[in-house]
Image 1: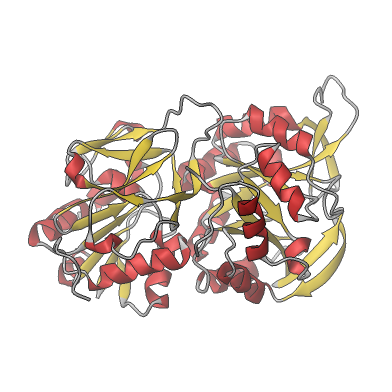
Image 2 (image 1 turned 135 degrees about the vertical axis):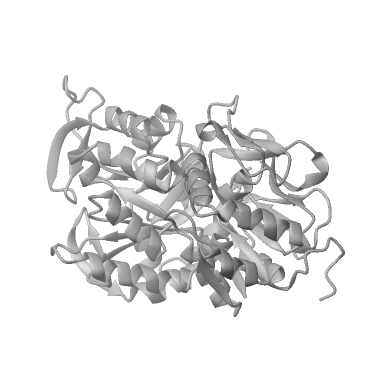
Amino acid sequence: MIAIIEYNAGNIRSVERACNHIGVDARITHDTKVIENASRIIFPGVGRAGAAMQSLRDNGLDVALKTAFDQGKPILVICIGAQLILDHSEEDDTPCLGLISGRTVRFRPADKQLKVPHIGWNNVRPTQPHPLLEHLGDDDEFYFANSYYPRPNDDSCCYASSHHGESFCAALGRKNLFATQFHPEKSGRVGLKLISAFSRWDGSLQPNAQ
Amino acid sequence: MLSKRLIACLDVRRGRLVKGVNFANIQDVGEPVEKAELYYQDGLDELVFYDITASGDKHPILLQFVEEVAERIFIPLSVGGGVSSVSDATDLRLAGAEKINLNTQAVLNPPLITQCAKAIGSQSTVLSIDVRRTVRSPEIPSGYEIVIEGGRRPTNLDALMWVEQGVQLGAGEIVVNSIDADGAGNGYDLELTKTIVDRVPVPVIASGGAGKPEHLAEVLKVAGADAALVASMVHFGTYRTSELKHYLHQQGLKVRISW
């Protein structure tokens, strides 16, 4: 069973629906016991950094996530979650979880024709192999809705990039943790494939046997 | 680089799909969930539902309907029509809406934009405006007036000033509906769209008037819109969404062609 971490009000049921649609057993929960017993974890993104971190801490979910990460449990992190796993977010000047070293920064395109928020479908190009990106085709695009993006300190933590005035990290990871700035649950077939691959992922960086 | 988006708008009344011309002459054009799924399978980038049910107890029907759609389609779903409080917005989000469209209620109560942006984020708070051309005046220097309540009530509010204020209040995207062009199939109001694209730093969705694929290409290229919204063109089966996407691609526009 996959535990989808509930914190704050938001559109996290869309992640659950996407899982159900592809026949993956997933449950929304804020119960740290359920999270402890789950085989995998999805940490979805909702709201703003400040409020989200507050809500995680209030419910002990920051500790639950860190514990699961240390145990080697496969974790998929989505959208603002991908910003919260770094050390700090520029949004609301928020100290974050620090599972990957780095900071979340705002888009400030020099070209005024480029709009912020960065909303819509964009190409995602792998910068190094990862089991969860194996199925990706050259023309595949994912749906984004973000004004901020993750900037890991170590390039080796970045697994895919996209472009919006500048190249930015669209997917990052470390060990058993994989995070996407885009929304796989809103990205049609290609997104569902990623979630499906995650449901089979053992958390290792070796190419998937399946 | 971002792709230009093709968005289909479904006007829904009591759970049925309807379509009018110049905001009037509403006709029933089918079952919305089926249409939504068809478009999703055929390469549509985003769906918008406007609930135009007039009755007061429409909220539960709309929520149930949004849930039904969200179980079957996995592209962004935007919902509008009578959202008048943050709890309306968060209820719709929980039901499966990625974005909430504010229109009349934002004009009547501008702080609602900020409240929604705080609760669900700017990227999910869409300001939708219905605009009619009028004579320029000190109140409406641009000659574009905001009209509310489904095109029935003029406001004496300048459209350009209103979108700027809306963005300052927290709107993360603007839908520009031209009442003059709506449903006529003679093309989008390019001038209006371009004026707003140039004025605001957030994405702009052009709406109202699309009748031919050429209209989409021109509003995306000439007016610089980030997305083109269609309704009649696809609802009556005149064009398939995939056909429109491939046309735009052939015209050299960056669109999503793999789905």
